[in-house]
Image (cartoon, rainbow, N blue to C red):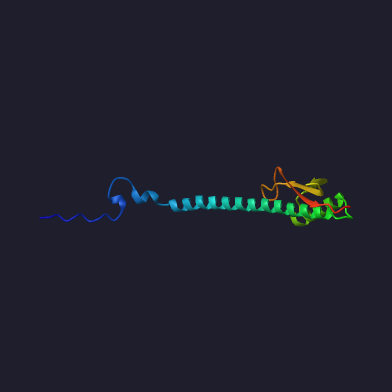
Length: 142
C-alpha cells in the first residue's frame, strides 16, 4: 500500500529550523526608508548637475553675446565685457561673474575673445571652484 505524501506546510517556518518568514517581519519600512533616501539623494544630485550645466550654458551664451557686441565696428572690448556681464547678471541673478576680453587671430583674421568666470554651484547656488568659458567673434573693425 502506498503512503500518501504529507501535506505541504502552510508557512516556511513549519518546514524546518529557523524563523523563515517571521525574520523578515517589519523590514519593509526600513527598506522603504533606505531606498527612499537613496532615490532622494540621486534626485538632488541630478538637480545639481542640471544647475551646473545651466550656469555653464548661460555663461557661454552671455560670453558669445559680449564678444559679438565688442566685435562691432563702433564698439570697444570694454563694451563687450559690460554686455556679457549684464547678460549673465540678468540670467543668473546673484552669482558673481568676472569678465575679461582680448583680441586674437583665427587663421589670420582678427577676432574678439570674451571670457567669463563664475563659481561652480555645488550646493544650491553656492560652490567652490569656478567655471570659465570663452567665446569668439570676428572683429568688424577696419
